[in-house]
Amino acid sequence: MLWISDSMLWISDLMLWISDLMLWISDLMLWISDLMLWISDLMLWINNSRIKRIGLAQL
Image 1 (tube, rainbow, N blue to C red):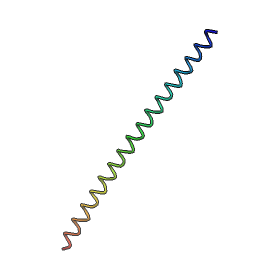
Image 2: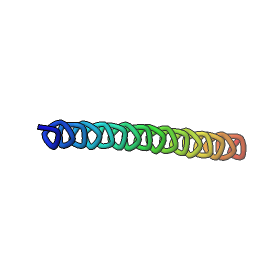
Image 3: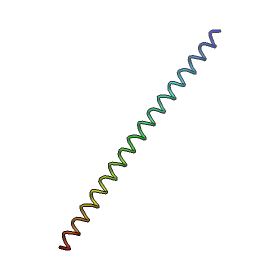
Image 4: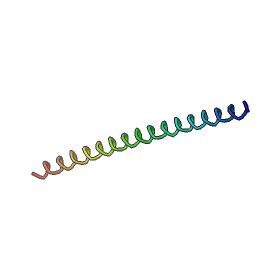
């Protein structure tokens, strides 16, 4: 009977560990998404400043 409760506890710990791992992966994906958004904003800003410079040069 004791081994059943031990195995249930072990399974519970494993499920908790898997849950923590999934949460960590989710946080990592969110961080990567934020980084890509920041890079996209930076590239847009660079492109806009280039367009303004070309527009001013034509005046």
